[in-house]
Length: 116
Image (cartoon, rainbow, N blue to C red):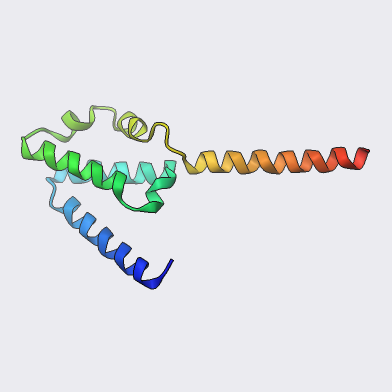
């Protein structure tokens, strides 16, 4: 990644966060919780830009514009809302499981190769 990419990424993130700060307070609170949740769960595409998070802000801006409360937009179970958003996305947990599986397979192969 070049310095230019880093600078552009930082500018995009600042613009994104400015949009979040322009949301009504209840939307900002829920957005921050969603962001924390998604960073913990770790959909891999979060590191490839702000598309998912920007989509959430778009949805929140639309909801706020028509006067909906944030939980009318997400539903009462915000974690389920997040899980539905990333359903089918590769997560860091998936990457970790794959790497563990590969390490176990390598170790098992080494063990069986020694036996022969």
